[in-house]
Length: 150
Image (cartoon, rainbow, N blue to C red):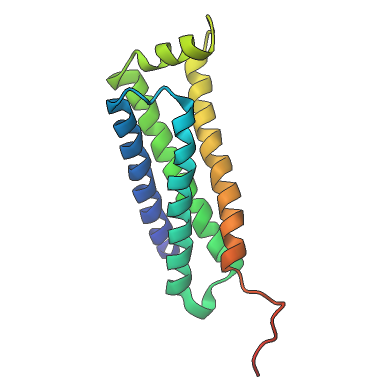
């Protein structure tokens, strides 16, 4: 369990950053513009990158591809789950008109829109996590193409 402590901390920090960004957008009434959600990938990517980098420094020679990959996935999945939970609470309790405004913007008379929105937020987070973790691990993996020093 100790090996998951660092990725969970980074995941919580990343989700806090995602929540703060969403709340800042909502202050300016820009949170219904889907274009601004692209920056969520930048925030998530930064959290995953820093977690893998720090994890590699902490592990030293014991760092493996699978350990780094697991750390990156853990960060992204924790951040996605916490942000999706926040998003559900925000849209159901804090700003009850949010999903109604969002649904009239994109869909006309669509029943069950709320569940699709929550599902989409979660799937986007998971897909972003997987793609970014695979990408960043290319930077951190040990290359076998170089000659090992004797």
